[in-house]
Image 1: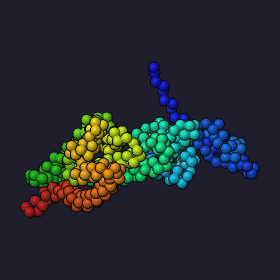
Image 2: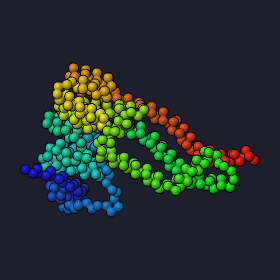
Image 3: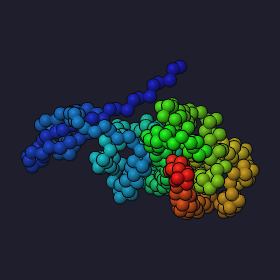
Length: 410
């Protein structure tokens, strides 16, 4: 039997309306909905008699809709959790959060979810219609909250989890961005010198009638290569970056190799390892506290940990736990987790406080990552300055060596 196709989410548009309130006063405003009839019905529920409702025209010079980021989802989670904790009904909470959002794409997403919930769809199912924004972890926790009648509590845990994960991602990006930016800028400056500045010196050197110093000759040869093949060099670099990005998106094996390489890098590898353990502990703690079965939770955590090497180890832990092995025993066998993490988990399993112990592990490693990123930044600054000084200074010295040599001869 063919499976029924999933119902596509209703398109949400903006409508401008005018009407009269219960006092007969003329009012106007803007609402969002899937069609004009629903807008009119909503206005009547609010005690407003609609006189004119029309679809809001798209602005000719309006800016393109912004992409929905993970930060948008994190803020949305916290806002929804706060609204529900304050006793605001779910549909009304969506209305308030949606109308107040600055990102039009996020506003449309929230209103689409609100329309589904209003039509009787469970919140978890409404969220599953948008897998790019709401992953399995998010939807599973919401589903658990709905089933147990503690949705506001679970939403608060989701919001805290999202905030912590975004913070740890931000720290990793901070550790990678500064050196990457400096390398790119240094390459561009060096290329400009080799293509535009060095040739001016080369034309001057041609009239010297003497052999150039080895360093100067090397730089001049490098300049000729850049002048002739600059388009190929830049194209190859851009192509390499594009291929790496596409392979990371499409190839599981490539991701596994890259993650292994990153973990073996000095300093940065340790930062990534600790950040991965922090995400693993935070995610599993949140799911365990929500009452999800351990085997199911581990499968979700494997996808959320952010590293293929640890993801495979967690899936192996899931298989071991499913056959009756204690999680700390399987964790120790993987040789990927520090002894402290294994011991903390063992204590949690013995005392029945796995979620609490994992939360403490996550707090500890998040602080460790924060301290290491700050230390790495302080360490890299003088190193990068020294490298830039040697690179740019070397080019300058190479160009002035023949002039110094002529001065000695004279």
